[in-house]
Image 1 (cartoon, rainbow, N blue to C red):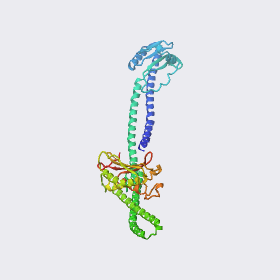
Image 2: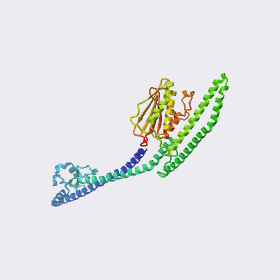
Image 3: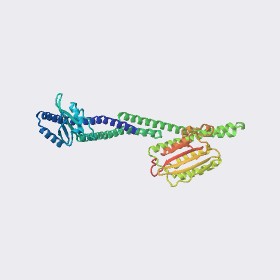
Image 4: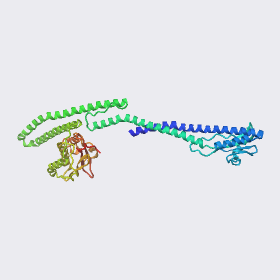
Length: 467
C-alpha cells in the first residue's frame, strides 16, 4: 500500500510540475525567438532605408560603412542589391549569387515570414530579407544571414533554470509525499500489526491513538476498545472453562466411584452396557483433564503477553525422553517409531520442559493412534541461529487438504475418527502451548501420504527473531 500511495502522489506531482514546466519552456523559447526576429527586422529596415536613400542620391558610402560595421559587430553577413539584382553591398563573404531565392522573393515584395521557434539545439543560420523601396515600387533588396547560436544559448540557459526548478519542485513533492505517506500509513501499519497480534491470540493489544488523520485516530481508539473487549471475553471464557472443569471433577469422581462399585452387582447379560458406561465415564474424565490443560495453556499465553514467563529447557533431552516413553505404545500399535539425527548444536528453547513434553505427547499420541499398523513415525530436529524446529512425520493416511486447516481447532475431529476415543483438543492444546511460548505449530500433508506436524520454538539466547 505504501508503494501504491507513493506512486499515486508522485505521479500527480510529476503531472502537475510538467503541466507548469512544459508550457513555460515553450513560452521562454517563443519569447527569445520573437526578440531575435524583432531585432533583425529593425536591422533590415535600417539597411532598406539606407539602400533606398542611396538609390535616390547615388551615394552608397553610408550604406557600405554601416553594413560592414554591422557584420564586424554581430558576425552576420548581408547582401544589398538593386532592382536589376546587381550587388551594391556584400559583407562577410556572402554573395548575391548565394542568396538568389531570397533576393527574388524580396524583389517580388514578399515578406520573410515568421521565424521558426528556436530550441537549445538550434544552430543553423537563417536567411531574412526585406524589399527596398516604398509601397509597390521596389528598387532593390536586402538579405541577411542571421545567426541563431546566441539566442539558442540563451534559451538553453533559461531551460536549464526551468529544469532545475522543476527538479527541485519534484524533490520537494517527493519529500512531502513521503511525509504524507508516513503520516497516513504508519497508524495503518500499527493497526495491521495489532490485528495480527489479536488473531494470533495476544491479549489486550493496543495501538497508538495520537498519530495520523483524525479518522485513523478514531479507528485506533475503536480498535483498542475492541481488543480490550476481546481480551475480557476470552478471560471470562477461560475462567468459565477452568471453573466448570474444577466443579465437574467432584461429581465426576463420585460418579466414577459409583460406577466402579456397581461392577460386582451387574448381571452377566448387562456387562456390555456397563463397560460402555465405564468407557463414556473415562471419556468424560479425559475431556475434563484436557479442558484443564487448555485452561493452563491459556494462562501460559497470558503470562507470556505480560512478560512473566521466561522458562527454558534442553529440547533434545525432552525429545529423547518422550520418544523412549512412547516406544512401547508404538510397538503395541504396530507402528515403527524412529528418530532422526540429533541437531548439530545444542541450544535451549524458550519453553518450559513440561510444556514441550506435553506438546510432544499430544503429537506422538495422534501419530501412534491414527497412523495405523505398519506405518512409520519419524521424529526429527533442526536448529538454526534463531529457531529450534521439531517435526513428527508419519506415513499414515493423513488428512484431506480441507481438513488440514481445521486440525488445530478445538473439539475438531476427522469424520473417520469420530467413533474412536478422543476429545479433539490435543492439537489445539499443543498449538496454544507453542504460541504461548512465541512459537508456531503447523500441520501439513506429505507425499505420497501421511501427516507432518512441525513445531517451531524460539532459541533462548537471542529471543528468536523469526527469519
